[in-house]
Image 1 (cartoon, one colour):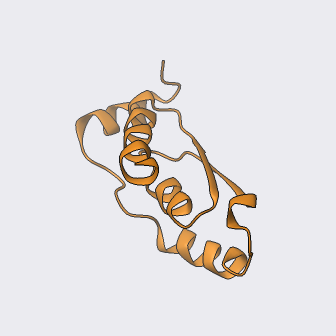
Image 2: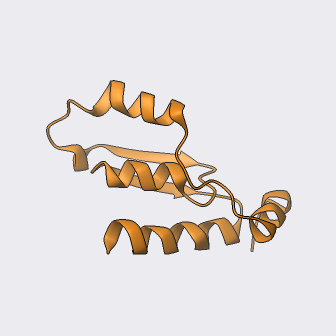
Length: 87
């Protein structure tokens, strides 16, 4: 059950958030690209939506986690992670 009806309605009605934010890319690059064991870095995104930033973080080899108030967004995020990161 979603705890944020507004975002649930948005994610159900339209595609949203395919690409990561430039600010997130810049932050991760500046702070973590020199870490030799990227999987040891755990990053949590609160309000991850359909997972654009979580996807990017995972693809770069970091341990990525996300939570969101929209059940639909989490479903989309899980599907994308399974298809594009794990598979």
